[in-house]
Length: 351
Ligand code: PEP
Ligand code: MN
Image (cartoon, rainbow, N blue to C red; front, side, top):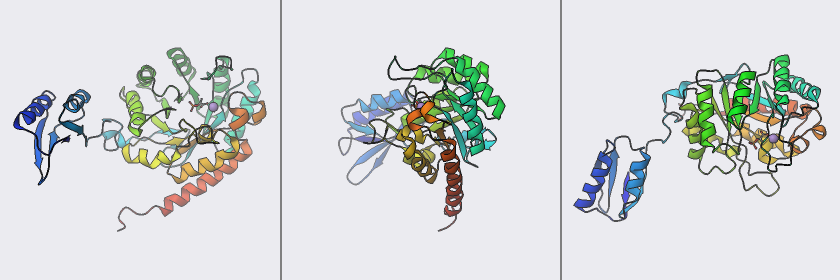
C-alpha cells in the first residue's frame, strides 16, 4: 500500500508508480477516499528494491506491505505444520529443557559428566556445553576443541542430545562430524549472514537443528525472524528462536530480559520459541523467575546454564549457572505452570 504525502496524486505520478511496480510484475489499484486516495500494490509486494524505489519518490510518504517479508518463516507458510523433536520432546507439545555448562572445562571432564548426569536426573532432555566461546576480551578463556569430545562423551553416556555453539565454518564442520544434534548460533553471530548461510547449507538434508539466539542488538522482531529465514531457505526447517535478552541491559540485569516477545513471535511465525533466562538476567538467583515468566508467556522450552559446582566453573558459570537442585525445582514448577496455562487457555470457539 502506497501512502502519498498529498491527498491525491497527479496523473503523471500515478503513471510513474505504475511503471515501477510493473517492472516487478505488480499493478496499482487506487483506493479513492473522500479526502485522500491511497494506492494498493496488487501482486507480490515483497520486492525490496521495488519498495526502496517507491519510497525514494518525493511524493511518497511510505509503503506499508501487508504480505509478510518471510516467505518460509511466516505463520501462514506451508512449513507451519512442521514439527521438531529433540531428545524425545516434540516442541509445542511438551516443554523442552536444555541445560548444562556455559563452558566446558577441558581440564575437568568428570565435572561436565557429573553435571550432565545431574541435569538429566533433574528432568532436562538436552545437554548444552560451550566448546568454543565468544568472549568480549581476547585474554579470557576462548574454549577448547578438546571439550567437543567431553560433550559428546557425556551426550552418549546420558543419551541426551548435545547443544553447542559454533562461530565459524571449521567449528561447524567439527561439530557436525562429532554428532552435535543442535547447533547454537549465539547472540553475537545472529546477524552474521555468511555464517547463517553456511549453517543453513551444512544442515540441509540432515536431522540437525539450530538454536538461534536473538541478536544482542537485534532491532525489530522481523530482523530476528529474517535471520531464521536465512537458515530455513536452504531446506532444513529445524530452527528454534531463542530470546536471551538484549542490550542495553536493564539496570541490575545483565541484559534486558525479553521473554515477553514470545507471544509476538508466535503470532508471526510457526517456529518454536525456547527462552534462555540465564543470559537474560545474568545471575543465578534471578534465573527461576525469568524462566517461569517465559513459560507464562507461552515459551516451548528453556535453555538454562546449570553446573554441579558453579564456583568451579568457567565463563558465565560462576555467576549465572544454577545448581541441579534449583534446576529440578524449576523444571517441576515450569511443568506445573505449563499444564495450568494450557487448561486456562480460552477455547478458540468461545465467544
Ligand atoms: C552461551 O550460550 O553461553 C552464550 C555465549 O550465549 P549468547 O550468545 O546468548 O551470549
Ligand atoms: Mn554463557
